[in-house]
Length: 479
Image (cartoon, rainbow, N blue to C red; front, side, top):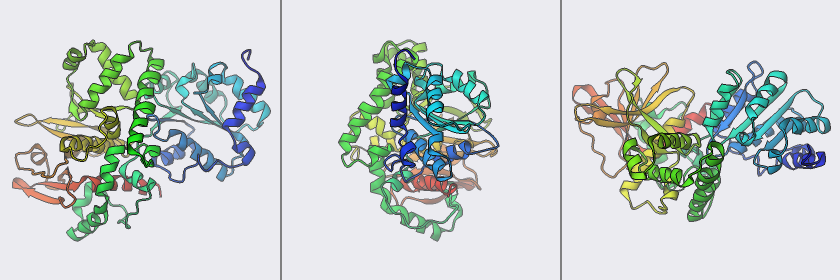
């Protein structure tokens, strides 16, 4: 406490917690739209029988802090005293000069004497030895509940393993789904049937299928913009798409590469990790060859593999592993890399208009589909990867295996004007009569069930329809 006075800590606490005086969370913090990640975290946080600390992990500007403010508002609405709720951001320099124990002691001596308190810690990975004192806090104070955010999930994952099992649950906060993007921008869609699943659309009669697709057909131009500006809430609302891309570069990518990762992992050569990320942006949705990248970028294999894991941990990329659809085992082979949000790739490569570039549209459409599938109902998904095999070593873009379902969902993304599928294609040969594989297309009128020899079937779904319905299904389970 030699660096500062108790009054300076109290002033900081009051500035972070205005509801102590007003009794409510400010409207600009308590956003009206609640995402699936909010409902998942609230379900865990308010559980009185199984106590867990909630850790929200996601890239910068995905809305982690908003979820905490919404949770605080929900607590107050359900009867919690505003003064029993404390919020702190570890980005503040003062919190780097004092112990959290001292801050909480000052809070409890001056603000509340209640045994039951709710702690919200933003960007917790910047607090030194946070896992140790959080473990002690959890073990010695059974009436304290904690929610925390972090932009670097491996750091959190490693520390939580060190602190023992059964204390934490990590909930991913990805960028907006296309459905959430439409809700945020108040894009109204006519009522859709409840319980509809895009993977089971083929089971509906043709008339119902047509009605659903017709209701969603007007979303095509909105989907193009979504691919362009991405699923970052604040930037999706921006009226200036060029400025939004600049913010993506400077406030999300640059800060993650030049500040967050070097600070967390003691990276000395920032240029190398920037080069690796730029290379992956150019090759998003492609299988990567570690040896080739090492030669081209002149980095060691050990360094490259570490950097890829760091980038995944910073929620900037997804790693898609090869899956053997026969034995259901992940093979030791090359991985595919996807940028975590298509707009990040656009921003880094400074592609401010991709509407007239079919190749670029195809790459970012596949990236968007993978992100949606990976993020959707992630707690139930066992594996999300890709498959390569067959007589000509062909590839299926996305394979999803659920824990209790022996039949994987296979998805091929053909986001172009012409998307013919022949009986020789792997997506057809691996399909089953009672479970057609899916082909995600570009044209809104390119949908329906297609049959091939040997009772093989595939079902084509336009990308905006598939992704909107995927988010719609996810949202419906929380209503």
